[in-house]
Each structure stands twice: as C-alpha cells, then as structure tokens.
Length: 307
Image (tube, rainbow, N blue to C red; front, side):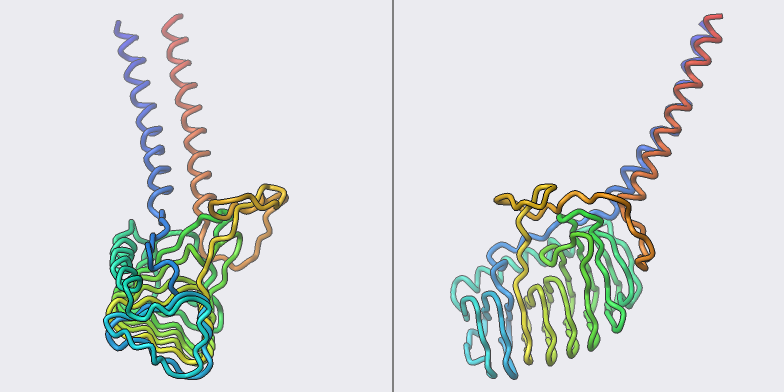
C-alpha cells in the first residue's frame, strides 16, 4: 500500500510540469490572437465620413463606395473618380456609419494586446493585436512588414490610443500570404497618411482622416465623426483572394488559402519578431520530451515496486 501511494505521488508530481507546459503552450497560442473585424454594410465603402464631410483636391480615384453622414453634400471638389456608388447621406450610408461604430468597438476591444514602440517603421510583425498607449507612428524609409508565415487568414489589429501618423514616403509590405483585407487600424483620435505614402489596411478613426498628396491606400478610410480630406490619391477596397489548392488552382468561395510551401525556408530577411508558429512548436516539443521523461520515470517506479 505504501509503495502504491509512493508511485501515485510521483505520478502526480510528474503530471504537474506537463500541465504547466500545456498551459504555457495555450498562452503562447492565444496571447497574440487577432480576429478579422466584421464591417457589416461598411465593408463596400472606401471612404466614410461624419461632420465636415469629404473634401478633395486634385485627381483622386476611389475604387469602392463612398458616403458621408450627417453632412450629405456630394460637392467634394477636385476631379474625383468613383468606381463604386456615391451613397452621399442615403440610408445605406447611415446604416454603414452605425456598423462602423460596432466594428470600431469590436476592434478596440480585442486582446490580449502586444505593446509596440512609438514607431512601426522597420519592424516585422507576425499576426496579433498591437497596442500603442499614445500616438502611433509609421516612418520612412524602411517599411513596416507584416509576415503571415504562410497563413492567408492571418489578422493584424493595430490600436492607437491617440493619433495615427504615417510619414511621407512611409509604406507597409505584406509577405508570406498576408492580405490587406486582414489589416485593421483602430485610431482613437485622428489619422494622417503622409505625402507619397503607400499604406495598407482599413483605418477606423474616431474623428478625422487626412490622406495627403499622392498617397495610396489599399484599404479603407472610415471616420465616425470627422472630415475625410483627400488630395490626388488612389484608395482601393481590399478583397481577400480566392482560396487555392496546394497546386495553385483556385477553388470557389471562402478566403484565400495559399499553396502549401515546399523546400527550405530562407533566412536573413531582417525579421525582428519570431513567428507564432515557431514558438508554439518549440513549446510543444519541450512538452513532448517532458511528458516522455515523466512517463519513463513512472514506469521505472512501477517496475521497482513489482520487484
């Protein structure tokens, strides 16, 4: 009986580190989780504005819908080409503004968050929810790189507690299957996209958004309460690519599924953050080795008892 209790105690002790490591794996998998933000009827828009409406200077092209409420004027100024529908202040726009509020709150409430430095320029970030407690900056010349690590459904949510300021000539680069449709920027105050910048993602700002001369946006500029100011820009609504088979064949419906990578993974790409997948599998490997050792110890104790 004594030996039996002794073995049972060792089994419980061996199980403790296994459970701890399992929890660590779960935390590593969930702490950086981000989910795509549902935009509802605001999804088809590339520009939404509130008080002050939409103003434009120079030739600007909008590849998507446009609307402004409660200031419904359609006299935007400049040479504005709209490859979509100008809903002005109609019922569609009003519903989209309500859906924008819901989407903003949903994105702002995602977590756990990963704190980032004040300047995103030059960083390489894996999917996750990133938070800046003050103004969030993105400066040139080195781009912000978003690395999906082969997962086309990877999502990034950036939460700025104050303004978002994208410097002149700054840019965002997508690699390894990342998609513009899965990048979201939640701005508690105002957003400014600098001259000649090449920006990616859907901006949801509480107040105003300014897109300066020559800047391009693969995404959306959606303002809850303020003005959207444009100047010789191109803004294109992002659409998730159709899924593909491992051979590269497109399949109907759903979101993009990239072809399965083959061969070795190149190194030296300047990454500054470890991918979630790598860290997770490292922890799982430690867990497996620890479990095997614990089971071996228990088996040894049982053999000792039987003799």
